[in-house]
Each structure stands twice: as structure tokens, then as C-alpha cells.
Length: 385
Image 1 (tube, rainbow, N blue to C red):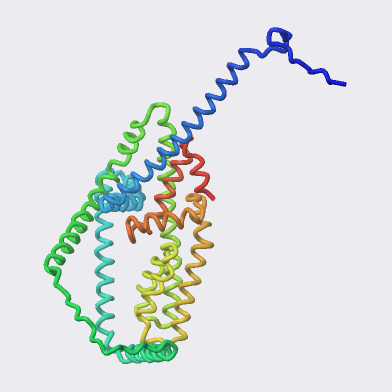
Image 2 (image 1 turned 60 degrees about the horizontal axis):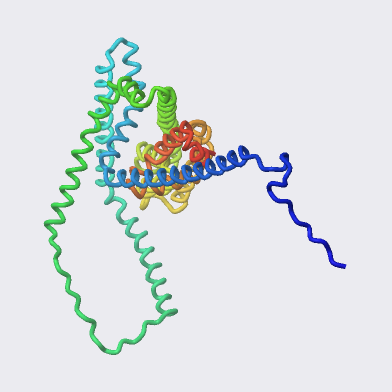
């Protein structure tokens, strides 16, 4: 028996309640277009952020000397701000207080350089006393190196040569005078640029309120409140970063001076302070902090005391980075370790040693900016802890 085919009703045979609503169809089409437009805008904003970031990094690499000078001046201005505020309380004008603060900074730099130079020259003059012990240590190292080389030759014997003489190699002089001239020109450029630091620091201190007010007025009226709060948080973060590093460095330095003095390290009273503040540098601080006491103790102290010096520097660095840093600076920076590591790698590549020093405050300021911009807030959350 054949089955009957079910013929669907024609559109005109549909009931009025079963017919599609044109308004609903139009709203669905509008929603689809809106989603497509939002996705296109989102992709465009991401592309703009990536291109803008690449352009900013390229500018930072090309103009690194100018930007390093500018950021160092900013840090010094934050460091000298308490001095200027204290002088203002005794009714000294801000411009005069800024001038006095900069003079005190230059005097402290000169006194510190003179003291370190004197101690370094004294150490150089007394170095021949320890030359015999240093030679014995170097001879021991050479003996171990030669034994290792003989062992390597026994394991991997050299192939017999076929009697052919090696081709002579000629080394051409590439113009040593021009190379010296280029290096001298680069050093002169650096020195002239760094001479601007005291002047920049003075003007940043004396024109602080003016610069902050006019910087806020650069934004639209509806965004000025956010800009003012952002600048305030960046200022508070920088002050906390500088004061926290100073307190931590002073604590490590005092502990290092005490331990180095008990172990008999030569010139422990200034080597301890150098080692303590070098230990503040992230990741590289351990190696840099070990270098001054170990270099001063080679030839004068035994291997046991050298190991104790290295262990002291290591323990103090670990305590500072894992205990003191989170307690003192964690509430202000709020950067996760991955961001800190990437920032050290990035800014160290762009600006060298100064990039390692300025990487953390720069990334802290970038995070604060991202937290106060709606489009960049996900980036700020990713950078946070």
C-alpha cells in the first residue's frame, strides 16, 4: 500500500500566528551586524595596540640615551622631593629648596666618589702584599686546567696532519685611530647628555605642580579626573619604590658590613655597602653583590671564609627578594614574576644595565595606566598578581 505524501502548506496558506515576524527578522539581522562590527573593532584595536607598542619600543631603542637621562632625572626628583618639602615647611620658596636639594645631591655624589676612589687606590697600593697568595691560587687553577686539557687530549686524540703547512693569515689594520675617535665621540656624547641630569632634576622639582596640572589639562574634560588619579598613583608607586629599595638596601648593607667585618674582609666598611645595594638588582644581584667582597678577599682569606661570604650574600639576597620585597613593595607594584622577568629581558636588551634598573618602575607605571583605561584593563589584569 503506497504511503501518502505530506505536502507542506504554501506560504499563503500559513496561519497568521505561524508566519515570521518581519520586525524580529530585522532585529536579528541588526544584532548579527552589530556582532560583526564589534569583532572587527576589537581586532582593529588589538592591531593598533600591537603596532603602537612596536613603535614605542623602536623609539625607546633609538632615543635610549635621551630617555635614560629623562627617567634618571625623574627618579632623582622623586628621591629629592622629601628634602624640598621639608625646606618648604621652613618657608623656603620651592625654587630655592629645589636648588639646595640638587646642590646637596651633587655634594653627596662628589663625596661618595672621592671616598670610593680613595679606598680603591688604597686597595690597589696594598695589592702587592697579597700578590704571592693570588699567584698561588692562580697556579692551582692553571694546574687543574692543564690536567683537564691532558685528559681531554687522551679521550679525544688529535688527528695526524698530512704535512701540509697551514695557510698564512694576514691581519689588516682597520684604522685604530678612527675607532678611538668614534669611541671618544660616544663617551663625550654620553657625558654631555648626563650633564643635563641636574638641570632636569631641578626643573622637575621646581615646576612639579605646574607640570602635573598642565599634563592633566591635555586630556578631555571627561577624562581629566581619571588622568589626575592615575598620575597620583604613579607618583605614590615611585615614592614607595625608591624608599622601599633604600630601606631594603640599607638593611642588607648593614648586615653585610657586620658579617664581612667578622670574617676579616679588607675594607669591609665600604665593600659591605656596595655589595648590599648591588644585591637589589633583580636576578643579577647575586653575582654582582658577590664580586666586590670575593675580589677583595682572594689571597687574604681561606676557601672556607670565601664560601661563607658567598653564602652570606646569597642568603641576604634571598631574604630581600622573597620576604622584604613583597612586604615593602608588593602592595604598590602588584606585578607578577613573569611580567618582571619579561620586563628585565626587554628593557635590558633595549637600554642595557640601566634598563635592568628602570624596568620594574616602568612596568609598574604601565600597569597603573592599563588599570585606568577600559580598553587596556585586561592587559593590566594579566600583568597583576
